[in-house]
Length: 316
Image (cartoon, rainbow, N blue to C red; front, side):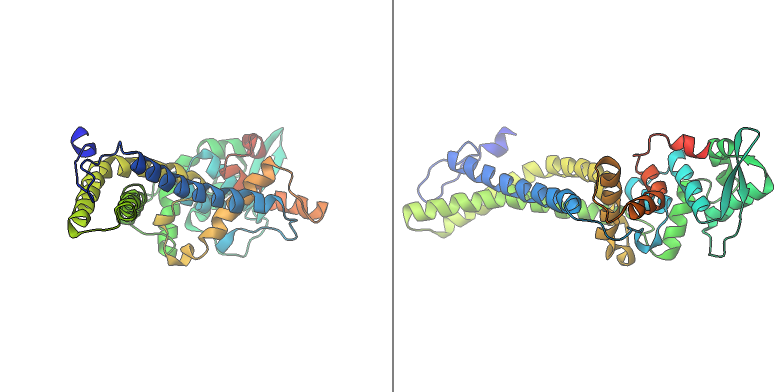
């Protein structure tokens, strides 16, 4: 990009200006450092130390009563066998199904009783258990795809969960446009800090140094900013897209949700962070009974987040 980085301008008597200027370098470093520093400080404090340093006095329940596969979809988009196993454990905790050993194998049976409303895909699982009882838990987990393959429209667990979330008004039917808007907005913000802020700082430096300004210097400033922004737009856009995809694993795909969920988004992200910390670090609970209750209730969610290594042993 030699043509873009060596654009010569005349700003208040300075005959040559390029990205090799020491003032521009300093301004660029300060701008990037301030942006990254603020971001990582916020992430470190609010997502980690604030939770670890406080005593937990109440069980942390899932926001909006989202089940494990619904929360997993908001972070990962594609559901896997581990997510299905977490859903089965969650259904057993609610009494929709139950496990019982028979001839050395863990079997799945319907009930004992559940009076709440089931999601469509939960009803499909319950119907399978009732049709094939007694059913080995390992067979249910290993052949989970066949349960949903019978549906011509929603032939996978991922599609069933997405359709149910769309019906509730929790997620957008087509989130691609919103995702593009997020990328455009983020790329613009990055360019504003790394290019325009640096150029403005450089321009202000020349103004105070020379003690005067003119319209020609402003035109040169705008021209340089436009050239640098155009040269950096595609690389920054691609880099930011990669970052957003990586961030989706930790802070979720916020661009895909509607306002009904967005107002609780910080709680959903905090719920995930709480589970990860409770599994990896010794958090301070008010009592051992509360610690045990919280560990049991959050077990299916911990399975979906990949912090339960022996999740197969729980259902087989």
